[in-house]
Image 1: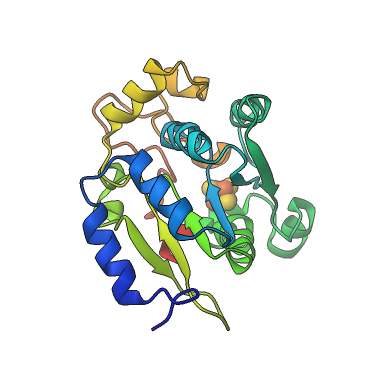
Image 2: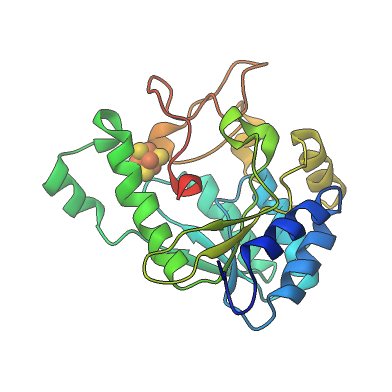
Amino acid sequence: MVIIGRVSAADLNRAARSLEGRSASAILAWAFERFAGRRLGLTSAFGPEGCALIDLAMQVRPDVPIYTIDTGHLFAETIAVREAYRRRGANVVVVEPSMTLDRQAANHGPRLYERDPDQCCAIRKVEPMRRLLAGLDVWITAIRRDQSAARRDTPIVGTVPVPRREPVVKIAPLAAWTRKQTWAYLVENDLPYNPLLDRGYTSIGCAPCTQVVEAGAGERDGRWAGHDKSECGIHSL
Ligand code: SF4
């Protein structure tokens, strides 16, 4: 199977294996060089790992597009940290769902996140992500294997199927990073981060679906509390 240009699935599998153990900077440098001239973008919700990855990526390519989905339910603090990175020169591109919150309420009723968070995420996160991926060849993401069981097998290089064209290459330069390593990078480099992370939140998504967690809880346990759900769906595409 050809992925993009003359890159085959076998090439990507070889690359994924050879990049294990390499630094995040080396993986980013490989990605920018290997896919030069291709439509490449990083996505982030401005969590700690996203902030670290943005800083690392901008050292290799200062104008790399940083796509971020604004669901309309973000914390003010999340928007503030997004704007802090924009002031640092990040090429932040905000992507919004096709359906406005008013239209969603008219079609599905108010507070859909309480009754059917999967449908709410499908409308407010997955739909804009699919649209974004349709215009990209390479997607760089900040997810880490140690964030949750669902992310434990994240490859450094994988693919995401896209309708009616070749798959998008998905690269996770921080796959092997730990939470401790992420925070060390943020602190050592004095990078802006979401102040809610100092107030008991360990993973931050939309305000209605994010709670403070007890000490020692799983990093993503404060997301969709009370629902059998741990992912919004964009990493299952
Ligand atoms: S995280 Fe909550 S509010 Fe945000 S899109 Fe998903 S269900 Fe809706």
